Amino acid sequence: MLLQRVLTALLLAPLAIAIILLPTTPWFAAICAAVFVAALEEWLRLAGVRGRWSRLAWLGIAAALYGLLWSTHTGMVGTAVITLGIGWWLLAFAWLRHFAFAAAPTTENRRLKLLAGLCVTLPAWLALIALHGHEPHGPWWTLLALIIVWAADIGAYFSGRAFGKRKLAPQISPGKTRAGAYGAVVAGLLVCLVGGSLLGVHGAALIGLGLLGVVTVIASIIGDLLESLMKRHAGVKDSGSIFPGHGGLLDRLDSVFAALPVFALGLRWIL
Image (tube, rainbow, N blue to C red; front, side, top):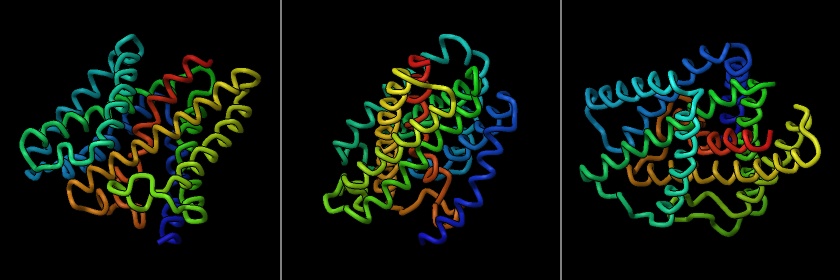
């Protein structure tokens, strides 16, 4: 499984880097919107939306919201949605502490999870646009945000295998350990500091960026755990099977969805 994961990552990484660095921000926003809508479709399946037409209707609503938010993303509305997105992840953390909440496959719980899916994806998309349009070095800041999450994932895997004994959230994700979380924070912090230095951040601003990197990694762990909770509720191992060894789009983006609003908003305060 590790070899399969590594090979898939090696194939996907150049494509992801090209999508970040080559297009202009409008084209980048359109590509990311399409990817996020596809990930939302997997979320809808986890939420219990079985009918194809029901899922298409929700995806149509999401697409319309992306278009609406694009027209206001440079103003206060975009900042407000990103900020509310961070507030949502604080609520999600409370949800993780009450594993059984919304677990029953009722209509009310399904609607709640549908709303949660929009809260997960829309602020993250706006955060991506904000990072990509940041001056200077917007695309590179975008890439750094994602590399922080990727490095945290790698650090969690190897530190968890080497030192992991105490479980982080056994009811939600038995494979995750506290040692893995510590390894994720260390790896993400190092990448953030090195990347910030290369992008011209020094002194007190670099210290602030390092602290932001730590908070970003913590948010990414919450995002990962929330998707694990959704899969537990749905009784499935992966959200999809599009990536060998990695599962579906949602399995690859769960940490990113939570990390992006934190990093984008924090970067505005630091720089």
